Image (cartoon, rainbow, N blue to C red; front, side, top):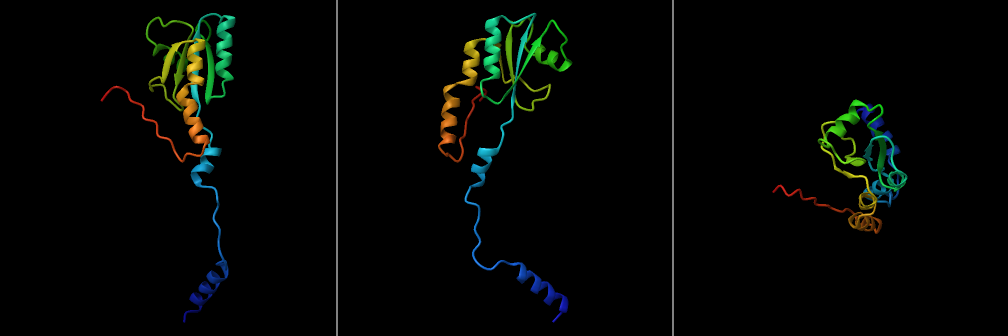
Amino acid sequence: MNPRRVLATSLLLALVPIGPLSACSIPVFRFALERWQPSNFEAIVFYRGTLTPEQQAVSQKLKAGGANLTVAEIDLDGQVSAKMRKQFDKLGPNPELPCLVLRYPDADAKSPLAWSGPLSEDAVDALLNSPLRRRLANMIGRGETGVFVLLESGDK
């Protein structure tokens, strides 16, 4: 018998544990669900001049809402980056200001907007506290393995 083969077999047998092996008791999907940080949507508040105290409160509520959002306030009368100008131009001519624009996580400049509309208490409440959002969070929190959400576009 080849001495190298005997040595390799002996080393392999010495490294193999004797006795039962146990696996991690936490399923991989649960580990990922509890530790994976969601990507942030980008919320942009476009305005001119200054926001009223009420509008500032709505913007602050958006920032403190606990959702996976990165919020930027852009004064169109000040210095506006080319990237933000392109996002504002997607709103068309003469949008109602102040307005709120929601962009998908990791969206590039050509990506469509997720949502846009006037900056209002109702819009922010619908974004942060929608019944569907609460229902999905409850299902996942109860230990559901996965939740499928079908979003219909109307374009069959």
